[in-house]
Image (tube, rainbow, N blue to C red; front, side, top):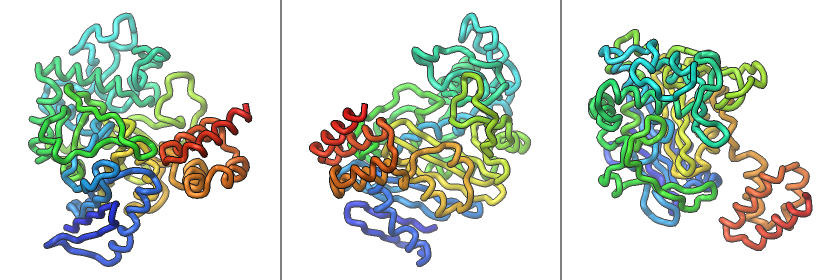
Length: 419
């Protein structure tokens, strides 16, 4: 196993005792610091699996901006929505053991969860895990908790659905998700530095969250488990989980196959589609039971985005390869295209569908230029790029974050003149 740790403040790279080291890999790793710097992300921790075996860790940067707390493979990150496939593994094990049926209505186990909604009684665990239950991602004033289409009709990403299934599982077993996950997934797979709730032991090596411009953001330590987003984990631990995915560990063979079998095609841009579809779009993406898929490529994937903490994982059972990366910055997903291309080159429908603003996007490129050269010099480029008011305001916020308040105010004045 190779283990690479690059500290962003000094740009040092070290191969530790007993590690195999490849010169070709060295040339690919040495630009990690600049990649993170451009994205304004303090640190990243990743695991690379090749041929069904742990190949190496990639750990770069710091646990918090301005400090020298170097990220390593045991640094605890927020998994965000990478919690969902871990929860799915728990649910599938419970189904294998006869605790629940994937095809039975969840209302059999948890009646009256959403009163006065005639479609809720037909929602099954399969609907929830494949994001076709009809719920919004999260309830709010515009989208109260109810179904917005017939379950199974189409894909629409929903954290609320996972909470519904969590509550049903807890009702069936009489135990909280935190305890269930420990017993059925985390402890058996050796994920000893992971939990769906916060533990004080994480404090000594945690990754602190940061906003889109690399500034410290509000930290949150979940006291209650949430199947959709609360998992705390490390690159090393999630690597163990990915090895279990490749092996189909702790699942019956037919269940392991079902886990990664397409349930529903994603036929629209964007993760949520509650209203009438805007068109029949060929995305090249489908959804299985807790995993996104690139069916034509034999790829499974998932992303995580809790705001100031981001993550991405991707793998192939056929090739027995998998990757996971955790970032302690809101702009972490902006480096995914560059990062995944290093290990899984080629067209990635999943990344196209997610449509996150990459490092080469005009808005990011022009922010970097304005920080380096000032708004007066860069303004003509901004005008010719045709940036909208929201993009210009984002650049103004970035200038403030970068200590260029005068330039920020100048840009805000130009935005106002445009109105």
